[in-house]
View (cartoon, rainbow, N blue to C red):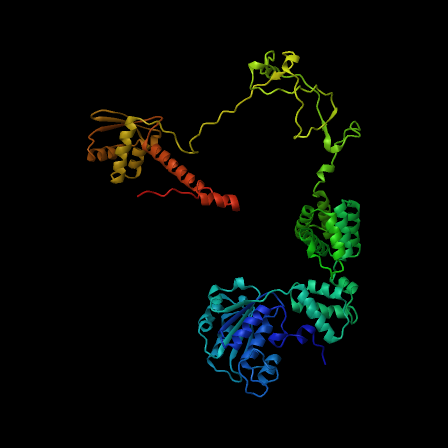
Length: 611
């Protein structure tokens, strides 16, 4: 008889045998017990978390006939009736599984839906299970929408997908959706222990922990890795063979790396990285293990009472947490996470691993304080953090000397508000090292003014930077208002509102400045020669005649300072500025900027036009 792999042999047959999906099991159990059955179910989740298994158990619950053949819908299928055994064996006529990865066209879906018009042959319900439903084409989805929305009372749809984002919302809205979560490593480890106990395979707890972490939340992957580990270990599971099979990094290497980083020992870091290369261990696994250790260290540093006393490595992790400050732990954790993304970019992943580890040392907090200046031994004995090289004194420039103001201190009462000036230090010779004075240290008190000559202290006048004038917004022309400009603005505004002038004539009126006017003649000035066209002048004169201004027009070319277009631009800029001030001064906007770092998109504020 052929060997049946663990993933198939121990596939759950009832809801009670499922692990890690209690939220889905509880909802389906209550629905079955209360006969509140939906016509379409959608199960989502990563690979190996039980989507197909739940579908088969649900089909058995709907069609179970009981050991005596008198059973009904139940949340605990018997598993011995003809319907339950046929569904487990995959030969139940009324349970159809369609693999949408290979049957994704509209023809396959249409062929499946043609069976929906026939009542069940053997069971109580027809169940159509479509796996990887997100791979169906758009036409296939559209073909099944109507049947999916209003199927016959004897038909149930069960859809499964690993990528629900690709399922159309029209399908999602017709289904009752359940999200099957990845399983915790502790849950996987506990289930593997029960399976190996039934199989009679001796297993090390540390080996099971490695397998449960390598499964990444998938129970099927965990059972497949267990099958491989049993074959690799010759019928038993031990930590060393399992670690070798998985390529996992021994925690001793990780602890050695973290301790070397905490002590700033670059030599040990490079040697340990080379040891990983010699043993052929994965560089990505090394950074992953370091991230896990650093995460446990950060938890212990924040919550010391959260230590796991049952873990063999807890004492080592606690000791490392005391060697490294909390902020350094957070920094190393972040660098390890980002370093894993760089391994594939480097020509050699071990060289990339070494660079990441050296980066951990380079960005170690306080590393910059250890750097010292090469002073040729002149400052031996002086602490490096308190050394300062003062350049040689140089004569002042003539311009600087002319700007100095000699302060006379013969009579202290002449300047009662002036603060006493400290005695200036004598210029130090080149290369001389002076200790840095702490900022909080008060400067030495100056000697009384009477005890010093008048030319001992030089005062430099304070230069006050004048506040710049508020300039007009960029691109807004300046306007010099004139009485003629007020009259011309009102006249042009009336013509525009009545639509008496359009196109080029309107532009001529808006861009022109009324320079002078008398009873029968007006003089206009424009900046561009292209506006000074005979046809435009004649049409503007006709429009003015119709508005009651029987005058002749003369147009000259020259600089202008007051035109309707300029006035309109200035008014628009003022409205824009006022609108921005309203938004910026709004308390809610200020709170969003202060609390959440919100920013206003430039150009998104527009004043509301008044009608």
